[in-house]
Length: 385
Image 1: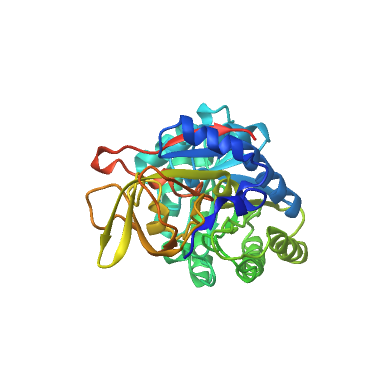
Image 2: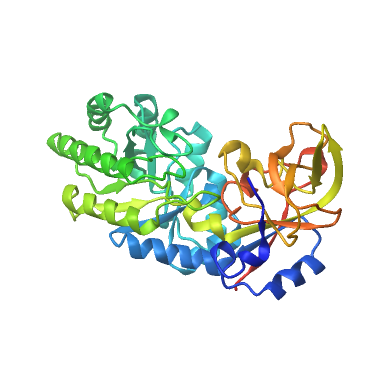
């Protein structure tokens, strides 16, 4: 991978609309590492998704980035929220969100977790197996259930059906158990996987959902909701199809296969917050090892670059240097040799104190960062540019 000169990116991509003077001022006044969160991009991404999927209600996946300013910004836009734990539900409610505008989509819940979410008023939950379905019997009519089915794995960076989703052949017995226990059934859900770059999985899953809806209705169950999950991709270093392509394919499949009376929802995370955050990190050390230049940064795999591990993301590197390019290693600040961000990156010569920028680091970075070595988590500065 090759770093890109910042002056070539200021008018387009993740940095469009940003005055270079503002960037220079921030790097002069704030100690690195820090992240810039642009709430204007949060709003823009939400509105764009709504325009391309007019039939679909957006429930932002809080797990992707739970920063309060993101939640508050989306709440101002009348967005709803997908939560995975009592803690995420509490964080969302603390930002002024009404509990009826949330959905709890974690398919496996401990009894205390389930109890806590029900006590807070969470209205809809997800299950994908008989054992989980039976937990609902303790709550009477206080909870609504969505049954999650497994999808085929294709172009997604993270296969979420590896861990979750009922086999299609097992669903008839699950529906029978739901009827037997008298659990309030609300519908079906699926998730094609994170950073999915093909429309095929969405269309194929909607077709399966249509068959399952007919099956449920044949058993006397009313289907109110179809949750089509998230997974909408953003650009890192490779080109991806525009969201409008996904919207066209998904909308066509929904119109053809799903009754217009059924409520359709989605759970985007990365698409909403990913491109809204840029990391600024400084070179704090350098050396030559085995003939390669090594640059040590003040953020790394145990911090904001955790997405390199969990998502396999390749984040673009921006620099204001534009001289001779050579292979280099970028490493994090901890004392662990595992903490290496890029092992083969084309970089210009850097000095200690030089600042690098890493755009599109809003999703699954801060939330999965740790405080290893006592270094703490990277500061987030919110702007509305």
